[in-house]
Image (cartoon, rainbow, N blue to C red):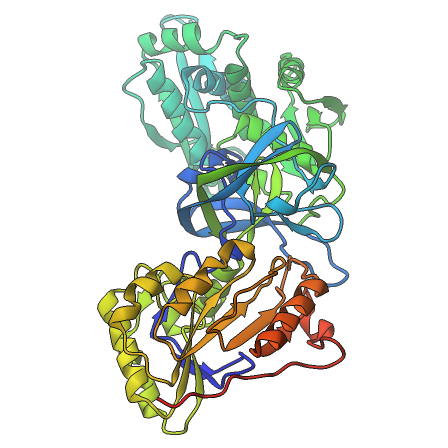
Length: 584
């Protein structure tokens, strides 16, 4: 891939490799694998079990001026694991383990804050979690679900054999074919208590003057008349249990058949005088929520309405986990909470941990109830893929492009070329032989000047003796803060005739730099949504060290959300110094 370069000191980019799952310490953004993430079906799923294609509840990453963040339905496009330095955050009665640079949404500016910069009393946006998570695959939950469905819109009779005028004994639940998830879950419930011989079948509800058969939507049913099955349902499923999973299942079944969530109101409806709403109110309270009785005094009858803001509805739905996801979409497009937050009670470092991250189409997701952020580099790859860039058809997976190897040889006009602007040539997934080929092309295209930048300085050091180092290849390493100064020694031990440092994004002070053998230093602040601020004193000190060591200094930008407005002046001037090109 070749293009005009947006990198100030170069003219073109050349990408014989694209993709990198760990492009910088600023985009690991990872969490402990057990961290629960809110899915669109209202389950809380451990992030370590999430795979591409799953859907999560997200929200607007960076609203435009005058707009609010809103809830969004987001698709997971990538998931990966890594080992990184981590912190444990105590917030809202929960503990979250995250990489030191994972970003969380605060209630006040700066909104996006990395984990290691959180402090006591910082308030993070928190939609909360239910006090207990139901186990929807267990027998108590599924038995409660069947009881709730039957109470809401099913028929269950076990009064006799059906002969000589006695009532027939049967269980039947009929729904629109579009509501088959209800029957699928009922099948699970019937199977778990040992019922057999039951299948989902078409259902003909007959015809009437009000509802002619030709106007009726297709319907499906589950039905059994086998006495052994009915006895099991009567004995195991229908009796009320003092079990939070049974009660959650009951509410889910009732909501799926006779519930609604529209206009920000979540209701359970009932027209019959059967006491079902009284039971519902009691169960809602047992799960830690509040409700209010409504009597519309018309054909719609009465209802029990769950009280509270949108976040209370989300917590309630995630506590009961209905099967009908289409009934749980009213909150999308509505304002994401900026006022509801929880203060941090503690932050402590816990060393290196195995962590997991996901990339979503919204760039955001909700982890353990807290609003959190994705990796910005992954988002850039997704954007390029959406724009139809063929080299990014695999998103941000590391991909070799051998057909691009000879591209610089076809550019006859001398240019300054940045190599792999969206990846890392020394990534562990790039074969040694392929790196050698890239260096061979750069040697043959001697009329160009190539700049190679890496964060994998250890692999650079390992392969350096095998590489040809012509004078037109400038080699650099990224050093974002004091943790990565060892990369400079790895660079110093290569055969590159021009060596440079990219201190971008500069995330901390770098005092006492050893600039021996270094010819160029580039400094820049982070830009874009959630950019971490750069202290002017850090930049001034680096410029002073470069001047003292007679090393060319290039100040790229102050960065921030609006990098153009922030500009790139330092000490009242711009710094565009470049190293002298060395003869080979």
